[in-house]
Amino acid sequence: MTRPKIYIETTIVGYLTAMSSRDLVTAALQQVTRDWWASRGAFDLFISQLVIDEASAGDPAAAARRLEVLREVSVLETTEDAVMLAKALLSGGAIPSKAAADAFHIGVAAAHGLDYLLTWNCTHIANATLRGRIEAVCRASGFEPPIICTPVELAEE
Image (tube, rainbow, N blue to C red; front, top):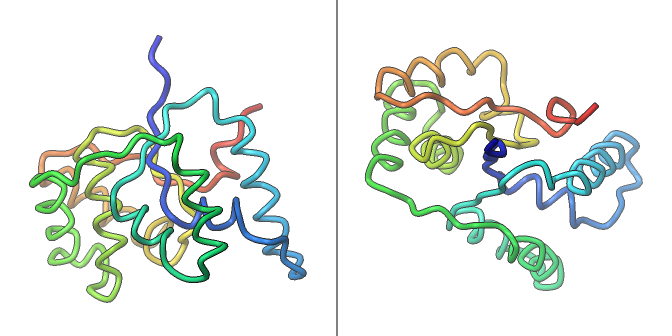
């Protein structure tokens, strides 16, 4: 039996490695992320070069923590299909142009046939009002969309 394949979007590694927040909601999301990460053995994890680029930005010490965690995750190629799908997501109105990077995360995950896209980005990726459009554009482009979810939704029983 093959293990489910998950694309890890940058917000996951951000919550995983950040200093514990004093904000109760953020602290809870960080803990959920850490708990999920501890149980990740049931999945094959993947990222793209975009995740590495985003994780590399900002405070050097924080970036180093993020990149250290990502060392064990397989990097997917950003294929022509992924780029084409990302552009279709943008031109089709599924993802706003100001969130082009988010379209590329979805494009890479879908073009590689991954089962899930794990994210805390509920503005442009894990957004119920956009989900139908995202899925429609993926399917119209010949790709099955990944299930877009947060660590809360992907928790093991």
